[in-house]
Image (tube, rainbow, N blue to C red; front, side):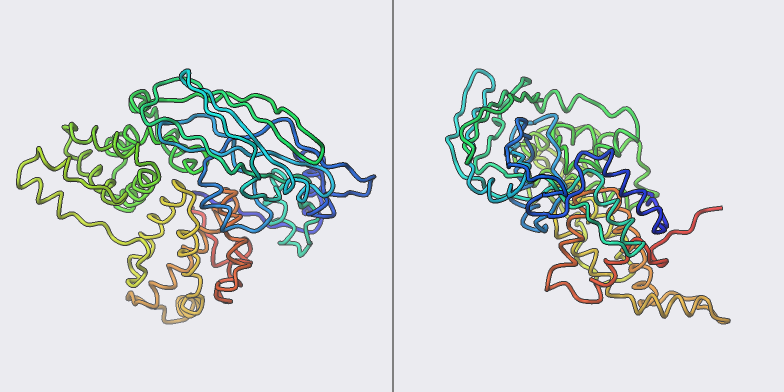
Length: 440
């Protein structure tokens, strides 16, 4: 991940704000609740198009974010075992209370089978940031300017979910939705989403490293567990894991978290691994299954006793264990792999805890600039390096990953977050300690 650094003057901040106002999806609003602008009030209404997103957004992500969040992505593809929710958008004044009084019903048709979900209250509502809002906010903050560009839309998530059948073959699911709001009954625009079986997904090999990275980094937005097996095959064949063990940790943590979130995908993964002849692939796959919390005995059963012992005794370090400063950076890779797969809050919260080592960084920075810089590694230096790595990676993800930006805002607001960590999180984009020197 290469962070995009920027230094913003007040004039540039104003330019960015104006650009967002004229080219963004939404218009600047003076009230996050009402969305009123200087013009006449706008009656609240439900937009005709709804979105379909992973159920984890409601169950795991939104509980760890503030009221104002980035919108989840509309899913482009589904796999067996995946569960989804519907999201409806409301605009206009008093749209939050309008949503709270609204209900949604929907019907899903797949493989000739129809499932009806009756009218029900929304499970949760959030105010939605304008597209690019985080970038504008960070740029303005660098110039000590408050961002008036808050939100003019809110989203509500359905209480009911639809899950792709475990034995689903390739096909298309069609979803129709109706809403009952204070404005009355209305039918929303129909949506169709392709469904890909495990058999089809497992045959789609990765063309190059760019496709592999896009798959890995964007998994929590567009989960595609049917391709986890070819992803592992590509990793073993193309990534120099022996020379870069951190990449192995990263992938294993990422794939393990993905399988933990989808038991049906884990069953298919286990079946394919059982008949795998490549021992390198099989070894990585066994670690992935263990990280996901699954029984590896079905895979070990046909193997020799020596192989069973070698693979069965393999252990994976705890990514949340920061007791050894020299290993913390490696654990960062594992935690980021877990975040990019499942979109969990806990990995970012743990990484941010390393920002409490600010004093170790200051001592190290002072010592290395002195007449007698240190020449031997110490635990304090390890903590100093980890502090810088934590800040750099958090800064990078804050700029490039909307969910990470939402989580960082939540951490700053949480009363349980140590004050020293909050202070560091507020200056991720401006602290020189979090910049990586350009290679000459």
